[in-house]
Image 1 (cartoon, rainbow, N blue to C red):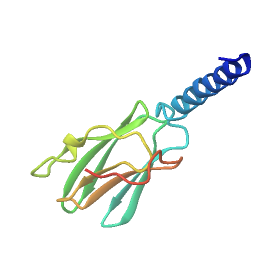
Image 2 (cartoon, one colour):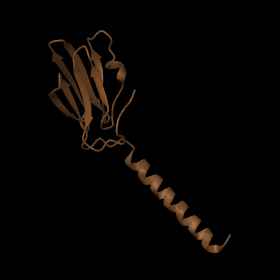
Image 3 (cartoon, helix red, strand yellow):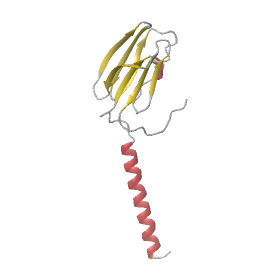
Length: 123
């Protein structure tokens, strides 16, 4: 191996390490600045909750209630009076584009703001 080959390999490796460090820092998801949870009922925006501020909000509709909790840069449904409680078991969402749905209450919570790290979500 020639000296120039070794130099080219070293430059490529250094560039790869730097690129991976930058990508992992931007995809961390811990920074909630600019992100917010949009709460919709039947497609109508009810609330917009910033993920940078912790809150405990009760959303009451004709069909029932959902207790929405924003904490540590994420949003979850902590309690609901629907039958299946799928929304409660959905866990905490932190990334743009992620959603929580409570179909019996016709409620959807979507993370908005920022840039989604992917094009679509499939379950």
